[in-house]
Amino acid sequence: MKTRQQAPIGRPRGFDADEALERAMRVFWEQGYEGASLTDLTSAMGITRTSMYAAFGNKEELFRKALERYTEGPAGYADRAMREPTARQVATAFLHGAVRANTRPGCPAGCLGVQGSLAAGEPGRNARDALIAWRNEGTARLGARFRRAVDEGDLPPDTDPAVLARYLMTVANGIAVQAASGATQEELKQVADMALRNWPPT
Image 1 (cartoon, rainbow, N blue to C red):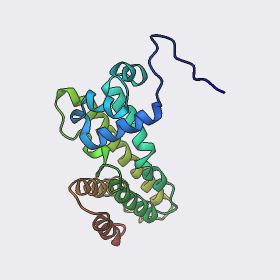
Image 2 (image 1 turned 180 degrees about the horizontal axis):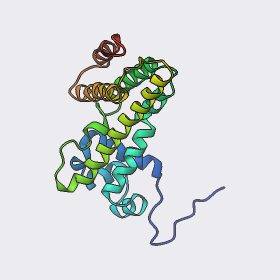
Image 3 (image 1 turned 45 degrees about the vertical axis):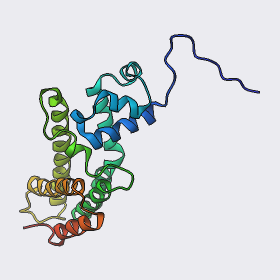
Image 4 (image 1 turned 60 degrees about the horizontal axis):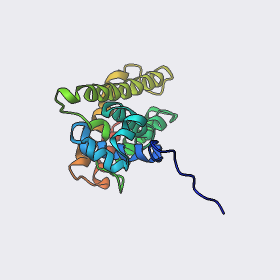
């Protein structure tokens, strides 16, 4: 018969760091950076502030780790879309992925990367800047993919890849805002399909 060994006196009780980070990500997703208090975060994570600081650092560091998790998880559709063989398929996978991610049952509506810190005071400036960089990186990656599509003859030679990427990201960000305002998955899929109907946009 196995017996559970007690942790040495003074050592914090063990917890599942992966699960704790998942819960923190959802708090930031739902409440934004400044709206999420340390009490909100530690309560959702099921740990003390001491354990949080020891495992993840301060609130800003926790937010950055949560954003990384969001990028690899709910927002992973963006990376998968880049691997589609044609620009049209990239755009379709990107916008349809945005619709699904922003309206996923059991998750906060909208996008952590868009709503996490749009309007932030001085305490949230670094989080806001991190999200600006996150969104700009996504636009740049789309631009590079569309540049390749032009070089391969998949898009017309007079296509501006940077503008096309900005257009697609603007539609995706709008989808996130609409989702947070209560728009349904079906309604937003219709918006995505309308944006894709005339491809590439002229």
